Amino acid sequence: HFMAEAYCNTVTNSTLNRDQHPPLEEIKEAIRKDRWNAEYWYKLARRLRKIQDNKIGNLQADDKDRRKRQTEIIGAMEEAVRLNPFNTGYHIRLGWEYAYLWKDPNYRHRWLPAADVSMERATYFAGEKNPYLHVHLGNYWTFRSKTINLAKPEWETAWSKACWHYKKAQSLEKRKRLAGTIMKYVWKYYPDKEFVSKVLLTENQSLLDEMK
Image 1 (tube, rainbow, N blue to C red):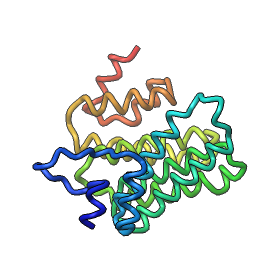
Image 2 (cartoon, rainbow, N blue to C red):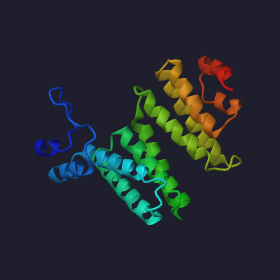
Image 3 (cartoon, rainbow, N blue to C red):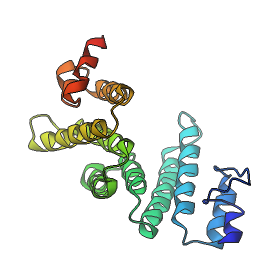
Image 4 (tube, one colour):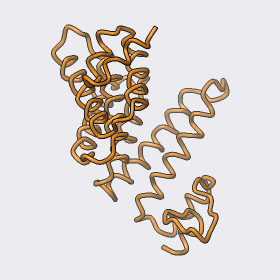
């Protein structure tokens, strides 16, 4: 473990000014030294995600390359979840990575359902302390609701989950700033004050008056 930490530290040490986001090769070396540390796999997935995002718009990176990298990201996150299934953030991150496979022909039948399962597991572990976990979950279900026809009961299910998580977040964090962040995110998907009002607690409804 100590040798692995030299390459990719996961334990905060105030006496050392260590890079919390080490290069890809150092993360891989840490995994070679200690593959049982879930946080190494999580950091690997995040580093690969950053590389993937940096290649967006790069004409030299074809779909096959992107799919290969996405498979690597998912593999790393699945390993992180396997090693530490109690980490809510891991489940959320894995769910989003599944959701990014929108070009895959099995997207609706395999990857979106897999993303849903990850988010349901995240909900189980989210608890009552961290409002931002519920914001992330609300964001996912808002996105998910837009993949479903409004006339279908599945839409109501997804939208209800989004509303529940957003309201839970507001109940845990009373500052208006959080409610404003939620409101702006939902507006991107549903630019309608009636929709946005559904995700706000009563005491935050006045924020709607500030929207243009």
